[in-house]
Length: 322
Ligand code: NAD
Figure 1: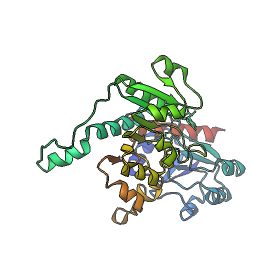
Figure 2: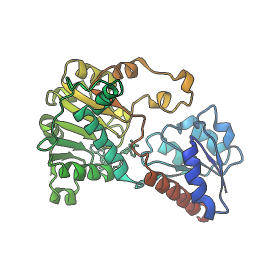
Figure 3: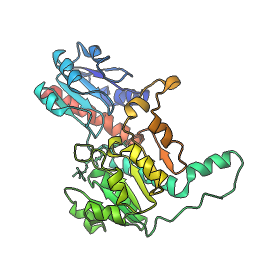
């Protein structure tokens, strides 16, 4: 079976090569470029493709894949909101993903963003590098005793709640399907309005879908505490970035930590370091001292990369033997 692997960085290639050593019948061919209408013709002659979060798997691309005889898409990620699942089904293309590669990696990154913001470590480091050891403007706050709201308590949300519980925070949760074991570990499920009104820190761990698109917007921000910290390690379009900027200007939002951004396909993943396209909203976000942005690296740990590669290979082996 021949598989075209898109959006494949050198570190992906290394882990996939190691994972595929024992799968002699599967030939992986690596492409650094994104799968898109411009690159889809590269998949001619392949049986399957392997993709990542910002590959274009919309109808036009899927129909082309089907016409080339592609039978499956092995996503190397947990979220698959970039795949038109209805069209994939209609085209008879199976879609695999990696649901459980390391929830802790993303949960810990959400906590890293919280701790960068609450102790202002990003600003402190720049000062120290310039030989400036003044503490003016760097006063932090303790997490112990703070109320943390977690929206979405699936695998990552649960790991996040456990960590915040360990800091001595009160943990409020909202999910369509509450998780009972989490309650016995100290979390309280509340409605969204209560979570907005009571939380000092709100962290998003739900998937992007029609009901969560721009969940954080002018109206939800108005319901939050003044000075709230918002963390998004889930998917960029959960947050209306322009309205979050308005919240930063009005100081309703005190801190914003983003690992994901709605237009990240154009920003984080374009491999064109010398002419990166920054959109104006993103550029504006980077000017706030109380905003920390990382480039979709929540999943990016050694253990997660190995699990992603192993599960992707296991999915392809299952496909081959079906
Ligand atoms: P999961 O499927 O285990 O959990 C998602 C939870 O969200 C479920 O409990 C579900 O009931 C809940 N949910 C769905 N709709 C909701 C809504 N409208 N309101 C509240 N809750 C809702 O998923 P997970 O593994 O915990 O991953 C969560 C998200 O994290 C993924 O969808 C993905 O977008 C993102 N993610 C980001 C990274 C990264 O590197 N930054 C890595 C992996 C996953």
